[in-house]
Image (cartoon, rainbow, N blue to C red; front, top):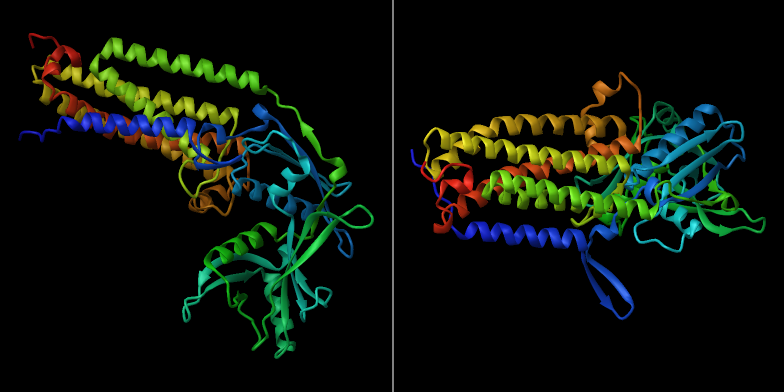
Length: 476
């Protein structure tokens, strides 16, 4: 059966798309209105670099100890939630320590992309306020405390009311919270229970301590005793984005106690490698990438040129997934292990193109025509390429599931396995898994699909209708 030919213009169309994608992912597109700059498309300059490259800030979080007995278990719970919040905001290069004796949590995290004034206070605020969910009787923020923190809520989720289709937040209580809420609602039918989010602010009180802001989320009237361990937060004017943000705040803010930030202990962290070292890495990486492409072109000729274009597209895809190029995705913190993941994925891409090129050369030795050699070469190399890439994808997913946030989809998929080893949130390993995964996915797109269609297309041009261009002999 004769294979279907690919039109000649396909090569140029794919080439232009890859070049445009690479240019925009590396340099981004900015829009200036006077002195105001707006990122239309984020580029490499918008990447948030890790502490080991660009430095960052150290903040000390202290619990509000008033009326609360704090245990080592509570401190560990607060640490775990802060780690989850950091990774949820794509800050994967961080250090979190607990000082149980002084009841403090020390957090280090990198600067945001483009930040140059090193405003430590503002950086801490960008990380997110430390919030705690509180249930009180009535609508007064000083009303009788019913329950609060991680002892009350197990999980919050954004949803739609099945009857009105209005956005709502569903709450699932812990066993302790379920029992407390059932007891309280049984005795408060016809009365209101207000739900508050208690969080620290950048403002200080008369004693120089950060003020605590209490925001009432809802104040429903108890219609009946809630004994099933679930309830709903609803209200007029609640939008889909609002309930999503509210659910995220509750999940990341259900601490056993409110946290405050000691601004007097904020300090700047000098980078381990520094900007000069980063520039050296970029230059060295560019030279290495160019040499690899040159060697592939010298050995595999036209196959090597197509492979070099595909590798450029793969590298651009990796940068795009980190910088926030795609709408809705924030900049991902790139660390030295993350850079290693990119390099390894590019190596996998080189291997992918080499396998295909070698298979095509083998087909010429069997006496195949140009079209037959290209078709058979890609077909015979596909299983080896897919096997290798799928294996790396699985490894990347396991790393992200094991060392990422426990509430992520990947972590939930691997939770039966990871539960045997306990919870581990390690941002540097998560960053390595993320860059390796995204690079491998773009390798499958560029190294398999784009390379195949570009090579089949360019082979239709009369000037390239010689086996020599593909590793064969002209008299073949």
